[in-house]
Image (cartoon, rainbow, N blue to C red; front, side, top):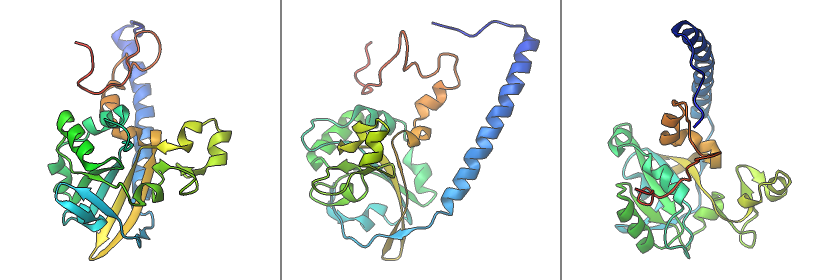
Length: 237
């Protein structure tokens, strides 16, 4: 365990004020990016998608549950798997109480390609309250570049084509299931796609990491004594 240097209160205060300036600049940049994100143009969703949920077969507009905004987390869950991605599960553990989103006219839902029965079983095990829909049999995952199979659609992930991903050594992101978050807006009967973000671009959603970033030991993901991300019911002890 490597801890910071011990200094006097005066030296600590000088260092803390220097860090505060960096934190303030980072927060200002984050707020500026959020403002720009909110002005991003939208694209009308023309295709009709079918999902299987707790209430049966529904369309994309039904996922809004009557609210004008919808955040979808594309959770990695291949139809052949018996449980969802552990890292996606870690991220879902970090979703706050849905009432705070609902009060702000926003619905949160998970969408995966595995059959509904598997999704329901994993959700019950994890104790999650959010709705979860199966997109199996539809083009939804392929159209939003979270299931990558070039036999069905050209490979694209995080706005990079396959050649670019391979050139950058990101071959992991050229096939199979991937994670992402997408935002949709509903205006009457019309649905629009306003935003999608992929992979580590969604680091801000990992609230556990954000808390750990406040501590001297940090995320503890690298080096001696590092801790691998696990399902919350599979940590030792």
